[in-house]
Image (cartoon, rainbow, N blue to C red):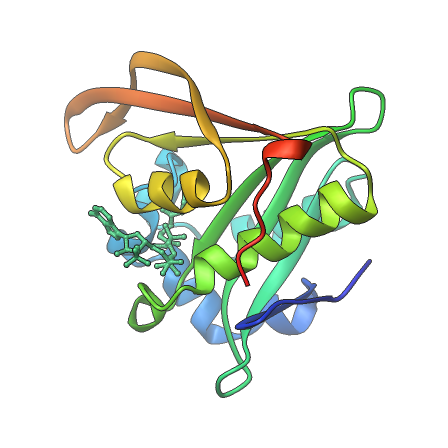
Length: 183
Ligand SMILES: CC(C)(COP(=O)(O)OP(=O)(O)OC[C@H]1O[C@@H](n2cnc3c(N)ncnc32)[C@H](O)[C@@H]1OP(=O)(O)O)[C@@H](O)C(=O)NCCC(=O)NCCS
């Protein structure tokens, strides 16, 4: 797996040391972090064994890449990026991100992490198209993807459940020639 250098973050392969970093489980049990990831099983809260099984599944999967996001400022593990549904026939993949350290939100780390991984997928691996899905209650996430050239391609009306309300799920996509790296 690759180590990818961004301007503000480094993406390194997610390893056991990240899984065993106590901050990681703490983020996945922080309601404000996980409320917008669309995983009902994380609301319980999630157990270490479940997280371990999830991470090991991603590490083994030929259709996923799982990265730890390292903030260059202080060399701190602050979150994860997942490349999912990697399909070499259609040359497509789906992106997901979690910046778990809430103190680090709004500093451009999410934008830089997705710009870095997107640039790698499109530029080095030759993917044609990237996709992402998000809950409509996550406008910051939508803004980041739009900044990188993603467009809203569909709205699944009332598809997600958020704090007792049915809300829209937004599908975004970006063709390779629309992808805009942010330095
Ligand atoms: C969504 C997330 C990845 C963004 O990461 P980040 O490092 O804060 O992102 P950035 O700093 O690069 O950019 C966020 C942008 O959204 C904006 N933003 C944040 N909340 C917003 C809101 N409620 N409405 C509008 N814009 C918002 C920020 O101001 C910033 O824009 P700016 O640079 O113009 O000021 C991070 O908040 C996160 O991991 N959240 C929890 C998990 C999650 O929701 N993951 C995505 C699941 S699809």
